[in-house]
Amino acid sequence: QVQVVESGGGLVQPGGSLKLSCTVSGLTLDYYDIGWFRQVPGKEREGVSCISAAEHNTSYEDPVKGRFTISRDHGKDTVFLQMNNLKGKVSADLYCAVGVFVGGRYCAIVESEYGKWGQGTQVTVSS
Image 1 (tube, rainbow, N blue to C red):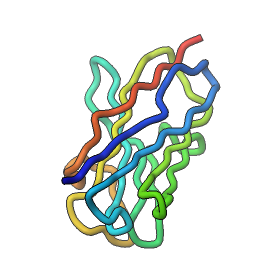
Image 2 (image 1 turned 90 degrees about the vertical axis):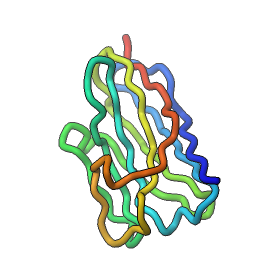
Image 3 (image 1 turned 180 degrees about the vertical axis):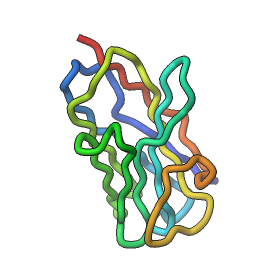
Image 4 (image 1 turned 60 degrees about the vertical axis):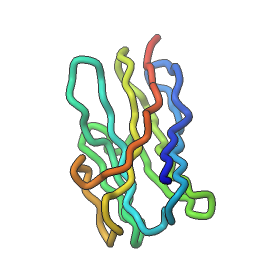
């Protein structure tokens, strides 16, 4: 049984930072791409970032480039998302997802590439 659990969300002031964790059990995390996705009330879910299984190549959507960093800690079956310079005054749910297939050199921030999702962790940016 595969479990995907996000943690680290909370309340942060504009310009502040949070570090999210995604812990996966029930599979060998090293073999799969991991993606982070974001959903704001009233908007569709959108991709944020991903990290590949091989070589740990990363991809970021334009709005978070230079502010967010995704990384892997395979020994603890964990992926992190460091979020700096957070903007806005809207709460968003951040979701971690595991690739459908064994990953390769590159990852894609596309929902169809991921089949095992966590329940999300809420991030609120407010002054």
